[in-house]
Length: 308
Image (tube, rainbow, N blue to C red; front, side, top):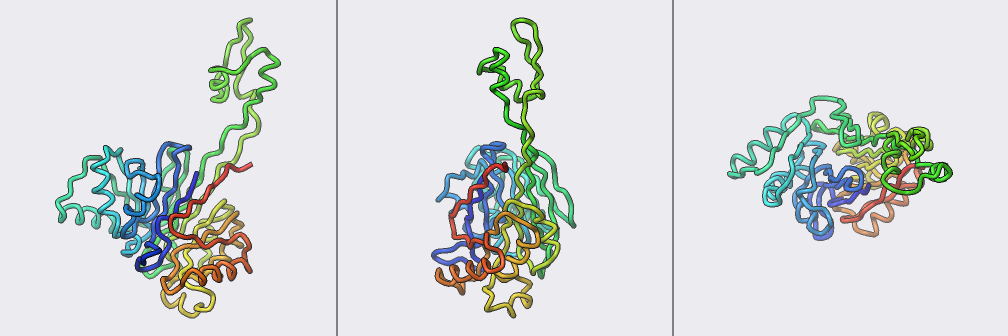
């Protein structure tokens, strides 16, 4: 599982930073990629990565501001040229009208099924593909959601030494036992897979916010997550501006990460007023509150290892 930051800027793109879009690479888990937001230029950023549009099977839009949305129609159109699989799009009320109108007015005809799901309020969106995904409404000037991706628990490790002691060596039977099936030995003995599995591992949890003021609802969204991706529009020195525009500072996000007990805090959606040196300062400001804080750059990929 990996997170790839296709765009980390707030509001408008620049020559070095694009607007909001994040790829959740689940090729190893379920063979797909999920996208959170699709700001203008998202598909151009995808071309600089190993992610292909046809691999994207679900897109989650946090809210209907252009820097999170304007790249969606182009991406939907491009998938038609890639023998793409069916696609599900999730977002606040109004997303269906936006998609339908954009495609109709541009004369775009998709070659794959595309289902758009509108989210009126907090809800569990689905349990499928090895994950439970929940949407939580946050605090922004327009309806805006954060998404919690919670992986199913993984089976424990196969106890190979015990199997070898029974005379059962590596092969197809190991795969069957790993799946909990029963294998019959040549002498007629039954080996039940569940009896030879170690303790199951808890799945990983990723929480990603849209734009938001600091709120306890984000703490709910991110509770015990391995990673929280939180907007960080302003540095601590502009703390007076954040509530005016219903955004957060890097320090606001750090407090949320600490309260939620997350493993790592990844800061994104940073105003274009800040240069590279400023980003380093914002990271240090956040780390004074929550040491595991990191300001993300465009095209940066973060690995999410299995839980022990």
